[in-house]
Image (cartoon, rainbow, N blue to C red; front, top):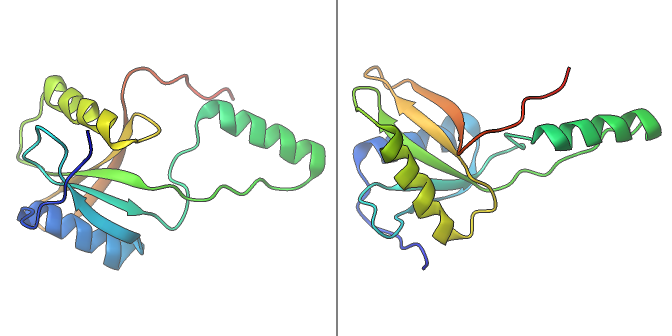
Length: 137
């Protein structure tokens, strides 16, 4: 099942996309509607990698200690869920968004939650589906 583009995203999605483009220099931005969803997601490419799994962090640090070379990670496309601060979301609502990503070819089960406040401030959070092993210190 593939995603489809909808030419009429809501104002929250438009505001978040403009913020990603103008304030964070994301590229390749597009609105995505997944099957069964009425809400637009934003797909785009950030300027740098947003998240590195704890296991990959450990491997990168070990390699850096061995070789003295810092491992560079290229950014990957991310899915952003635009929401308004006043909205009420349940775990089932978030689970439905993650389930809809299964059919887009997304390689990991994470999204960037973009919360739009009344003053047009956008705050971003990385959300993972399920449990993520904490980083070892």
